[in-house]
Image 1 (cartoon, rainbow, N blue to C red):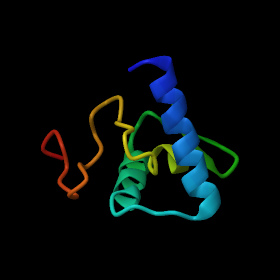
Image 2 (tube, rainbow, N blue to C red; image 1 turned 30 degrees about the vertical axis):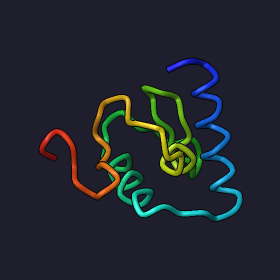
Image 3 (cartoon, rainbow, N blue to C red; image 1 turned 120 degrees about the horizontal axis):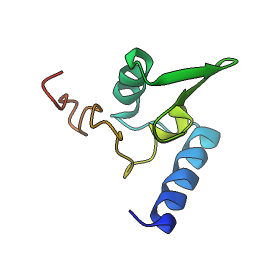
Image 4 (cartoon, helix red, strand yellow; image 1 turned 90 degrees about the vertical axis):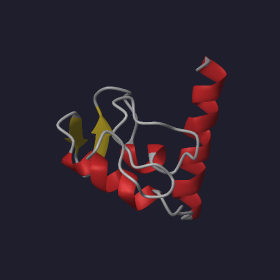
Amino acid sequence: MSCCGKITQIVQGYAAVVTGKEYEFSAGRIRCCQTCDKNYWIGKQLWCSICKCWIPAAARATDKECPLDRWPDRKGVMKNGE
């Protein structure tokens, strides 16, 4: 993905957090990240150590994908048999 594509995802995700917008797949993504061994906390904020994203924003970016391919797809089906 190009740099511009990543910036678009970041802006979309942060805008969704600010406006309170939730997608049907956001909660599943966040739950997945909460159990991942690659996350870390800064205060009360959950971050990904692989893509360096703030999880609440990343989970709301519709075109964002987990760098480890662990997120459920948009129908709620887990990838990689998880």
